[in-house]
Length: 139
Image (cartoon, rainbow, N blue to C red; front, side, top):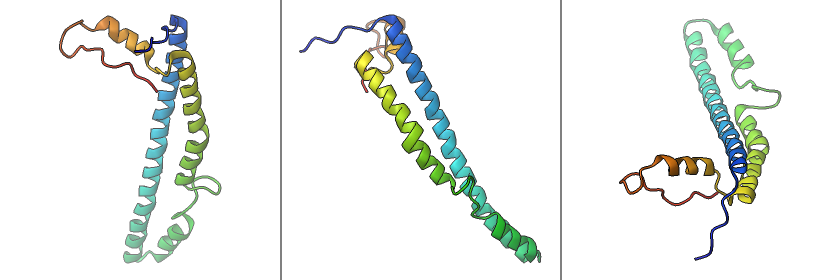
């Protein structure tokens, strides 16, 4: 069995831990972006129901205005929400993930949550069921 690489110093583990925390925050932001996408799409389809109701109630002029001015309107210039998500995913998000992975690979052997691993080592009860260390995480 090959020797495992030496453990990084505390300052390195702390800095990588902060980088990973920042990425986890970006992951949450990405989730909100997907929620924005779903909610916006749901609202757009609900407008269709409102247009139908306005027509049935004899308000064709309002129905027509909503249908032509609001249904299908870009949320940003030239973009629907799916396009915003694709640009975010392919640009900022991918760059963030790639750089975080590269830093963790170089400085902690790919162990992104080494700080938490150290906390687990200190807080668990050795030999007690449910307190096993498990395999070290990587990448």
